[in-house]
Length: 109
Length: 113
Image (cartoon, rainbow over all chains, first blue to last red; front, side):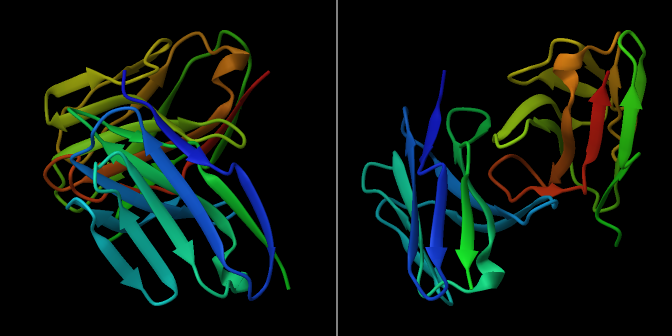
């Protein structure tokens, strides 16, 4: 079945450093979604990418969808303490949305 | 709008007990989902529903049952609770289908001892 792998599992950075998480699917995706979960909270939708090679920005966050629509990345520039949390990608395949394991970001102020 | 609400927030069960996790959404969404999240892990789909009266299994349905008698409500039933069902359970909904963003409830933290 469809699998979505996310790396790294954990990332610890100094405040102000950049952060990137990568998402890879075993199958071609129709779209990919990104969610953020604060510690003790619930996942909150960030963005959806649909087109091959698509790049979207939200302030310091940059999301990319690969040309083959099998991988994606989230890059945060100059992290802030408010960026702490776990970032999940979720790939939409033939039917269901499959979540990656998430990348947990911690930040040293 | 309250969005997606879940009750209870926390629950401790003994092995073999049963319970129902409640989920309600007031956004008139067709699609509803139940996920479980084990510590440090991602979200696993348990069951989902595409509308009232229609439900289908997700990735990890064993030990659970659902029903969808109304658009708003999507309860999850645990029969004969086992320690392996200790997890955080999230209910979510989306407007048309899984191509739309999912709105999550606050979760129910369940411990089975």
